[in-house]
Image 1 (cartoon, rainbow, N blue to C red):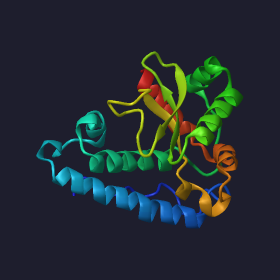
Image 2: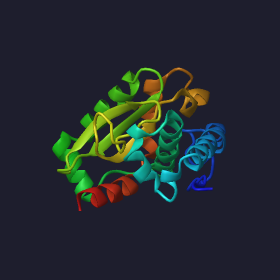
Image 3: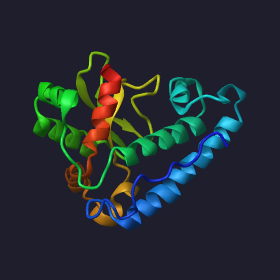
Length: 202
């Protein structure tokens, strides 16, 4: 198989009470596993995708069928999502902290991000991305789209991302998506976000 389901970087219950163990088991073992399997089906059916990384595939997604778009996005987004969370959370530091201050401060970043996530109609994702100049921007995408796709409305390097599909929060928060978005900041892995930002801006 071209792609394998990456393991969670922590125990299923590590993010409680923000995200409970049952949600993590279903989300990782069922949803992410299904995206992985379906992505492999799509890749196997298209010789030009053989040996390409998921980032290369996303960079040409506009020319590929929905099977690859939806499941390639789902595969990458979830791998990113697990890594951008950690027990205990933290706070921004280094160059990323400077970029957050330049954006208008952490409270503004959180408010804008939460608003984007709550306002995303139906299923999708909220993102903080870095553009080519290193400035931060808050955006959202429908379904399993992301800012790495060649036809994304707002392109950039994802620094933070939160899944606002109902399966990500419904067992704990029911229909309270804003409550989930607010609580999610308690488990943000700012060290990983800072590493990705440093990589993006050089």
